Amino acid sequence: MSLDLCTWNVGNASNAKVLKDLLALLDQCDVLALQEVGDRGAVLHQVCVQTGARLVRFSGEGRSSGHVALLVTKGIKVTSSDITLISPKTYVGRLVAGSRKTGYAEPKYIVRATVRKAGDRKPYPVGVTHLVPSTSNPANGKARSLYRRQVDGCVRWMLTRKAGRPVVLCMDANAGPMRKLLAGLRKIAAYIAPRSHGRRRIDHMWLRNCAASNVRAVKTSSDHRAVLATITPA
Image 1: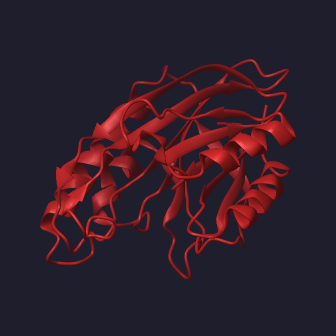
Image 2: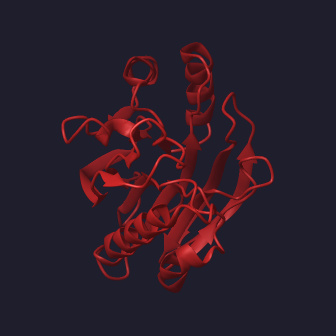
């Protein structure tokens, strides 16, 4: 009845290093949630060819929709999948990381796969997203407003899952879990967030109707550690 999950922002390492990390992480988990993979399509395809994993990624919804994705290991059934827009393209100014050229933050999505292991009575919806950065800068009020909108979208997404069912939302939150901006998620879900970016706890799993054990952060070629945990129904 357990599911081994991992969330990882792949960063800027070479394709060869990212491929090596992906293969190593898939050996340790059932579902791998990924951020910053919009330009890693060839690597993701190679992983699927080599391992038989299934890629859940939507690249037809807009230029940024492939930015987040899920890899589901061979033997885990994907019963359904979809993509949810949590914020459209939004002006945030040029002081926000990723928006310095245009001043605009790209649309943000949650990609979801509902998965079932052999022998499990209930499937697990697992989502992945990536929230806007640079909200701690006092000059970035527009980014904070957008962040609140994105968190509200995450809350709605979690609450629309079937009542009583386990649900997990993985993210690069670009903020620690106790930031005031994340209060809406803390009201409805528990979280795990070990140190994953230097001393910062910005890579999270938000859990509803389930619990986590064996939580750890693993060094990778990225500036983000990969966060792994075993999830069981509460």
